[in-house]
Image (cartoon, rainbow, N blue to C red; front, side, top):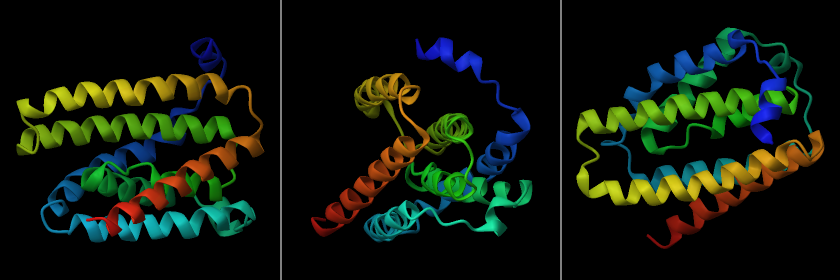
Length: 190
């Protein structure tokens, strides 16, 4: 059902291209920083950002400068998302915040984030393989990860067309807020 609905909405590729191209450039920097930045500090900073940002977004700030920003600003966010993707697989956090601040319709938000996340995660995986960060011992975990991500993604695709713009925004913010809480909690137990 959701795949049929997907074809009904055709996204202009020029909308997602700046994010993806800049994100692909950012991934190698993120994988380089992976060896330099302390993981627990990174998790705490990202967790605090998400915990503070999500409630702020519930008041629906109207920032005209962001809403009227163009491809260069989108590319900058894509680049930073690529860096975060290479650094720890968090490529969608900043672009999610950005497309919400731009007040794009939920279909455009979802399409940008879906294509961006897929491209950046795939490129990050290839970069990890080339750098030797992944090896055969990781394959069983990759299978578990693929299964555990695919099932909720299919459920989410089904629910996407049944919820309003407001419900979509609250769901995304709730999930991001929860992620921030888990990142901070995991920092505490390291």
